[in-house]
Structures are given as C-alpha cells and as structure tokens.
Length: 556
Image 1 (spheres, rainbow, N blue to C red):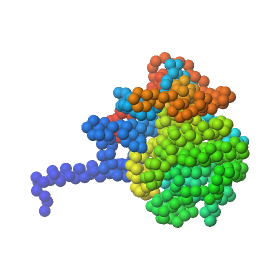
Image 2: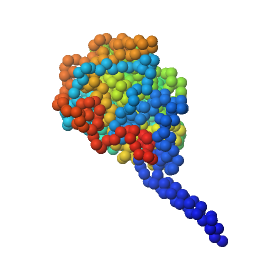
Image 3: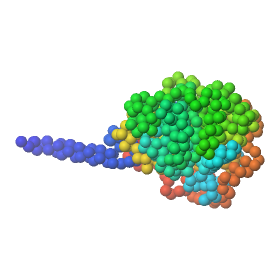
Image 4: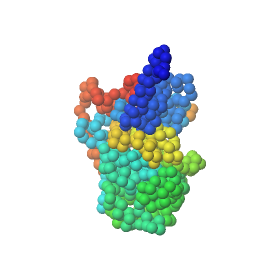
C-alpha cells in the first residue's frame, strides 16, 4: 500500500536530503585538497567550521592565539598560509603582552634597511633561493664537497614514523624548493627518490647499511647511496626529543615494506639501541667519520642533542689536534619532535636549542674551528624569528621537521605514536594515507620553505644584513621581567666577535645574494621593497579572506 498523500512530501524531502548527503560524501571522497575531509567525509567539515568561527568563540573560551603547544595557533596559521602561497600578514597588531613576557627576543631594526635583490637574481622571488654561508666538507677537502643551495632544509624524519606518501610529498617538495631532505634513521626508501637531494642519516640501528648480524657495513652503505642523489651523510648520536634513548617504531607501523628496508620482523616493535656499536668514544667517532668520508667522498657530520658538555669539549679539542672529524654538526634542541618517546625524556632530558647552541659553539670557536665546521640548528626553528636567532648563535643552516609536516597537512593531533594520524602524515594505515595527495602536498611543502626563506631575508634586511648568515648579534636584545633588557651577547656569554665571520667569508656570503634592485615607486611593484613578499601579486589572496564553506586554514 502506498503511503498517505500527506506523508509523501516528507518522504520526498528525506530522499532529497539523502541524495544530497550521498553527493557530499562522494565529493568528499574524490577531492584531494583536504585529507581530513577525504578520510572523514561529511563530519570532517565540522572541523573547518569550528576553526572558521574560532576567533569569535575564543573571546569567550580560554585558549588564546599563543597558548597552544608545541605550535601556537598563530604559528600554525602562518605555516598553513605560507604553504598555500597566501598573503600571511596578521591584523590589529600583536596580541602578546610584550612587557610581561620573559625572554622575549627583540630584533633592533636599522633605520637604513638593505634593499632586496633584483628580480631574477639569487635571493629574489619567486623562489628566494638562499644558499648557505659555508661549503659543506670544504674545510676537510672532501671530494664531493658542496655549498647547500638552501640554508633552510627538511629535517630527519624516518620512513616508518612518517607514511610513504608524506615522505614522498616532502621529497618532491624539497626538489621544487631546491633544498635538502634528510632521510631520518629508518633507511633510504623508494619514497625518498622523487627528485629531492638527500642527507642520508645513519642511526644506531644502521638501517639500510647493516650486515646480517646488525653491525655497520660500509659496503652496504655505498650500495644504498649509489641508488639515490645522496649529498651528505649524518651520523645520529642522539635526538633532542629523546636523548639517551634509542629509537622505537611501534609494531602497528612496521609494515612488510618497512621491515624489508630495515631488516627486521614485520608487525613487531622495532627498537634501535641507545648507543653505536661501531665506535665508543670521541676518537672512535672521528675515525668512523673519516672512514666513511674517505670511502664515499661525501661530507659527513653528526647530529646530537646537548647534555654532557665534556663530550663536545673533547670533540672540538681532538678535531683541532687531528685535523679530521665531522664536516658539520647538527645541534638538536630538547624541544624537537619525535614519533614516540617517554614523557620525562621529552620534557626533562637535554638542553633547549638556544642554550644548547650557546654551549657548543664557543668550544669550537675557542678551538679555532668555527669557520671550518658547518653548524645546523634543529628544534622548532621553522619561523623567521627563531631561524634568525639560530643564525645569530652561529648556525649556518636550519632544519625544519614538524613545521614541514604542518605544511603537508598535519593538524597537531599528537597521535603520531598510535598509527591513527587523521591526516595520513604519521601513519601506515592505508585508509588514512589515501587522504594525503603527495603531488598536491609537495607544492605546499615547497611553498612553506620558500615562504620561510623570503621572510627570513626580509627580517635580516630590516636588521641591516644582506644575507641572514651575516646577522649582527648586537642587533638582538632579550627582554626580561620587570622591564629589564639584556644584549644578546651577554645573555649567552658570547664574545663580541662571535659568530666568527672573516672578512673574506663575509665578502663571499654577500656575493650569494643578487645586487640590490632599483627603488620602486609606491604601488603594486613595491611589495618586496616594502618588506611584504607576495604583495602586489594578483594571484595571491590573503589568508583571512575566504568565502562561505571554505576551510579557514586548509590544515589537513
């Protein structure tokens, strides 16, 4: 029997609603821009709606733009906007309480800022190519020494900890941005071979370069690096987020492919030791570095968190005495990221980056090695202010890890250790991974790196430096409690001539940036000279200008 006539309109409405819902589900599953919506059709839209009305809600709810950790809402918005090539300026002025923030880093601008380079020259748009201030491996005469084309590069995040599509997106992005991509300690995977040049990291598990007994094998290392564009090798001693511990890849993430690459059983926890079996002291480390460098011709460095300062003092002393040792040192701050670690080790073991770098650099400077070693900083440095601060402490290059993850869709869900990352970045779950389109997200990774380079240059020019590597530490003060302010050198105990930059190297670094562009009259063409990268470009819109139904940030 057919339903009563008066019920038929309701059925029609229900049928139309069902059809509309089915259409939305189909659209969500097909679109590739947002992993959250692709992985969670319909309900994923609520995240963006709540994000869109967030500024209004937060007038009545407790969380401010700068309270969330490890990355505040403002920081995440800046990364998301940069990754989409949007104008990433903020309105109404700072919402920080500048007079009550302890350890506030303040850059003292010059009344006569440097002009940006001319269009088409190094450091100019659209790519803002900005080479490192030192040659990697040059001081030790490595056969394959080179100057990194970008002083901003992608940090070591293992294949396994990250999904294959996330690693592929980062590698493709590194190729587009012209920067280096560190493999992490999980070994070299097919996902690393999409055009991006690599730094091959060797951890305590020797994944990808181990013999059948789990010991380091130089022959297998040489086989691996012959398969991909490896430009340097990094020996990982420890990691800022879990110093003194080995690595742990939870069983849920150990897929058959990862097990094959690492040489371990599939579906079981993969733990690597807290120490290297190939050496056990500083002299052994130097010999290990020289052995690899002699065999491969590549620059070889070390990555470590900073704890026992005796190790660093001995390393600098023995390097000065022997003339050998690491070509580069990556200082990983205690605030760095990890896929899984005990809370106590993340919170209380190893020094935070600024303190760590300020303890290590003086030892090499006093040993006369400051210009021979390339210093790389890591640990929440993927923003213009923190990156320039790291350079003022003596860094030559910056590695970005979680910030690059944000650029390809991470929403800071902090589920990396569960294999349930909702955006497909830090998981091996096939359903969740399908939401991340590596081709689309690679462009966002590249845009973020380019955006960071552009603003880093703008900040350096505002402080009177042609190249960020030439920032004068005297241009920085640290504001403290009760209206105190202390010069940067005094806070960190630096000599007035640190970081060390000889006259010859200063001229060399200045030559890495193109000649200044002629002054532009006010108007669309003056955006770069005004210090607003992207301003005047009609193809770029502002991060806060969007239509109804559009994602507020594009995160995920």
